[in-house]
Length: 209
Length: 209
Image (tube, rainbow over all chains, first blue to last red; front, side, top):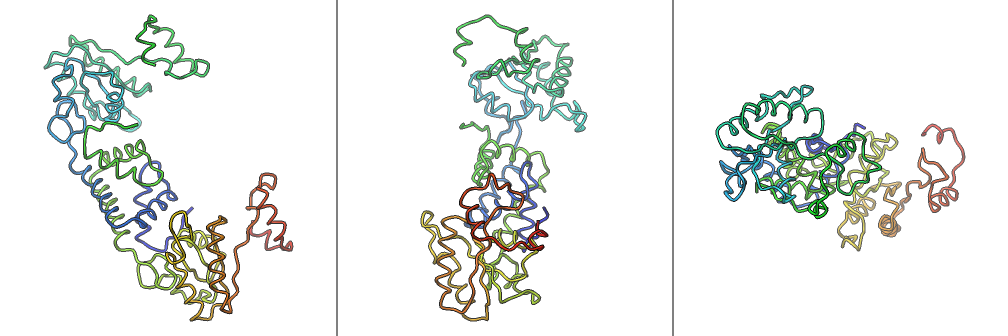
């Protein structure tokens, strides 16, 4: 529905808000009216937080994770295992894995995934710098934590091939039935894989639940 | 879930975005990462559109609708019927009614609704200015287009009492079964009212469908 707005200022604000992914014009209007009800300082803080993020953000020169210095907190932490690199698509996955508390190695953020449909090839991603890391330091293991999609698999395979000349173990995170999921409703491919890749029943598995 | 962010800039941006109504931290993170993928100009335009709205918006001195001059487009339009005032809670309702194309009168935006729970009394709303409008000009009819809630009814009744000394007809918009709704699923109060307030079957009613 193309609504007529009585104010061009409102029209611009609604257009800006609805340009965000997942926000339609109706939600955008609600957000704009919310801002009008709050004091001016609210909108000023809002705008400056977003501008600061966009303008001042830096990326770690080692792992390309988001940070405020030259090197991110994880790469600077000498208590972590710097011989294990977990390769992820984006910083969201770094946060998700950090939140599990199960990983003590370091990361490598690709900044995307190989997707010919979106025009993203291997050279648009931080794959060359991953190979350099593996070539120049003593890396024991590279863990691929990529999406279980065609793009994720393609990217994983490309990295696997690029790393094959080096003496490094390349592994992928386990795929199987999610904890809390009912087997009845799992898709066949996942269920099939989870049977093929079964592990011995140990107390540790039970504790993870 | 309280996620650890690797960057304080990201933390601030996510906090700002998730302070908007209906936006959680997960959505806020997705929006922040979207902004990082777009060029700097995108975020600059975004921020300036919101700041411009908040800082430059004016309200019509007659009807309190949002506008950019002293008087809004509707109040300045001499082809409209200035003797009929439609009272609405907010500018959203002005837009909704304008979009129907069925109304040629003018508006009066209250800027809220009487709600003791939220600490909003009659004096926080533009009720006094409505009474002045009715007292000082030749107004034939005041149409109350307020929500069908307890607050809406309270506000309507308050306005009705305030306008009773003046020679003006006060009406409310019709309440009944929505067009497209099935009678089977209508709530009893609405259905009961729609039977009590039945109108004669005219072609006009059918055309509105």
